[in-house]
Image 1: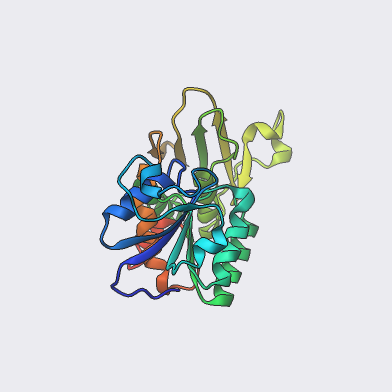
Image 2 (image 1 turned 90 degrees about the vertical axis):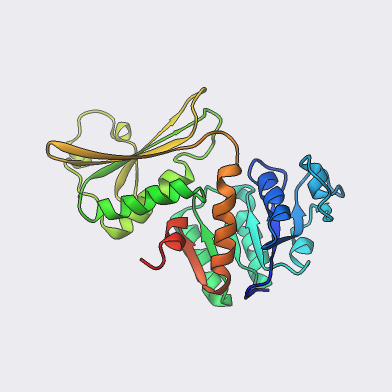
Length: 273
């Protein structure tokens, strides 16, 4: 069910009790532009979603069956779950012609291509990326820089317990810039002295370095270099999922009439430019 027009958009939140999902539930309930149509989680099943996050009753009970949740008259699915299930969740939504905001990280270029093809096939929209506003600005500004500066590398810092390396933000940044132009590499792998792995993994032609340590808050940095000068762009975030809420809801609205997969919130924010 898409094309909601100016009426409130009916949202299904998958991962409703997670770090991002609980903030999404609260924001949707508080915003007259949206309606919480359904909430999916593996725990607190049967409990009111609002009460489960410590707020007032939302009038929507948590369920653990995404298919049933999507049949509740949904205009968009916002999914913050796990890479192991996101493809299945997207398929369930597309089978019902429901657009999807993919907040879950860990997908590859190949996975994104398949989702884009499936979205075009059924004529619905989807969006993926880091939905924090300043992360979107980082990607937008990096796209501008990549058109002028031919060499860059990406550094991804996260807590020791983050399993995906690089982070979805760092990987998407490198791959999106690589689609604009492949960065120049001064030394080929066979010209290096020492383990090639020390230069980091390559995505979109750029070296990406992931650091995983206790005591670290997430940040993503991209460094552009020219002889005698450099440009550093960096996005920092504090723990908690609140920063992804406004971008996720904006994406849910913008993809209603845009078939195919949009990679990066910046693409939606700066569509007119």
